[in-house]
Length: 143
Image: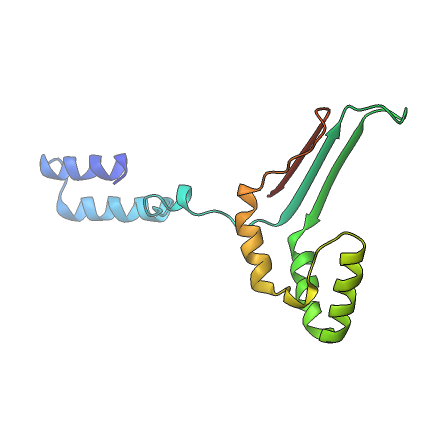
């Protein structure tokens, strides 16, 4: 219960206002700003809209200065792409997956489903990216 509502009830209990007046005051408080259920604001996460990849490298071995990458990908684009894979024939997806595996990208496009993407997005808060370079920092997260 918020402080203003408590004060109204205390005034009612002390006889400073009538029950009708207390009711009108409480209704007026509700119209000013609806009360959110306890824990709703802190417990519920907003649905992320972007996948963010940040890379900062102070390594200057190539001679072109430090590297900074700030990649912001709309998750809606990823979701649409995953939905589009359902239109591609399974044989084509299998061939594409085989070529990706040859190139060192172990992804099975046949198994890629929209619900898998949503699970991935939910777990991105727990992602840790290890980089074997003390001069490079990589962060992957959703926002």
